[in-house]
Image (tube, rainbow, N blue to C red):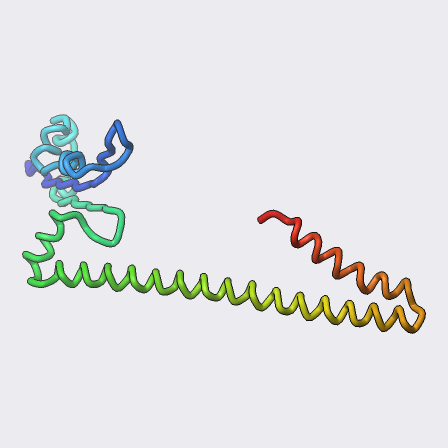
Length: 161
């Protein structure tokens, strides 16, 4: 009977005091295949088919653009210079994200500015139209023409964002 080689790497150790992961706690959660086999009951191993016991299970997870330092050394061991390439890739991604956020903020400011100018021109046209309608003896139409934009203007100033 062959025993399985299981290797489980996870980086979900959480500090009880802060709720944040620490390096030492992450390293504690990495189990070797022998540690996993020791924790399995003998009955479970004996009842497993040979095909199941021969699989090597390895999983790794981390949050963020950079892998943990232990994985950096593994990348570097497999391909020289790869850890530098990973850091460069993360830096480029961060610069790209910052650029997109700046573009979005700039576009939002421009949209607000443009909207204010359009509102100003509409208000000027409405006031001019109301004055004209008042001069040709149409006071009710003039009041509606000035009242509708004025109501929208006042409500936009009173609205909380």
